[in-house]
Length: 126
Image (cartoon, rainbow, N blue to C red; front, side, top):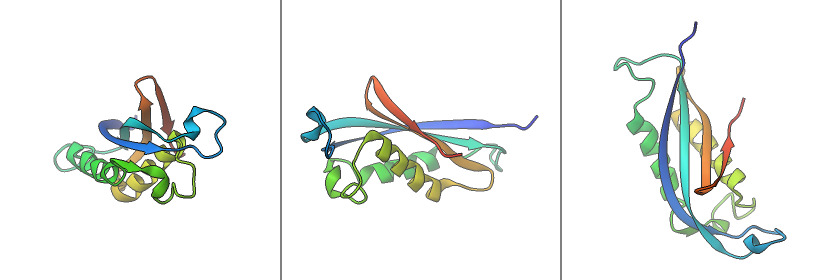
């Protein structure tokens, strides 16, 4: 049996966006208090017997969230071209955090982005 550890952290940020070409109210500028849940899967423990330090995951996630906090997402690349949907924002977090955090024994396995308390999207890559 191969061990596997899933570590999760939560971060948040507030921002506004407009969904381009959307046939409804979200085509007008509106804001959200987003929550970002990052999952890291580790297959081994390090010298401290951790899959990855929570602090490392939190720091990387908070730094990325800070670049979007209290901003109009449609003005920020890649959302100046891509629609700033929850799906695209979740992918954005995943890909940036993957590039920052992944090591041989631990990798970002999923990002869940909560748009509201009752609506979220989970992004992962196989």
